[in-house]
Image 1: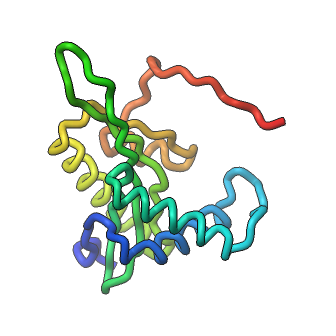
Image 2: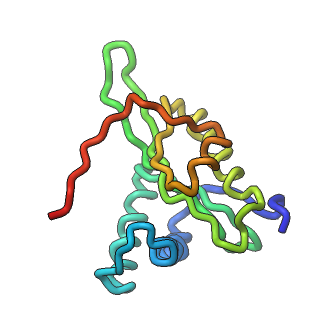
Image 3: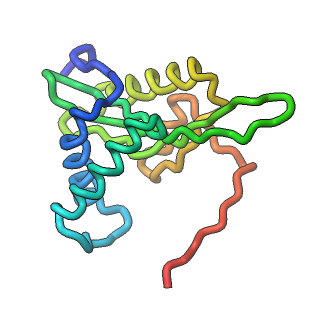
Length: 162
């Protein structure tokens, strides 16, 4: 498989059903949180479809998809986080990168890097301050190879489930 056959573009509303199916499979196949679904696929599909329709339509979420032979084989989501105006900068935003996924047969052929390259170029054009993500253990090296670094300035408060 040659990565030149893949094209990267922004997802549209027409892609939502495929994105929903991929999200379900990604979470359930890799199950990094060791949890079983608590809702049916139909419930998930309804909720996730609504979320994606609203997110894509409003521009709060931008989804980049990798397409081969007219089929989406990978994606990466960016939530656009607007910054509060400052006296010296009235506009600004940063991006939260999430849900990077390449289907198994297409991994290790450069498609993930292609997605990240397009995403970074878009963020630069949009004049984002930064892109932030929480990588899985498996993906840390991938993101480091693609220019992401671990910063120590970020702090978090984790809300525990009872």
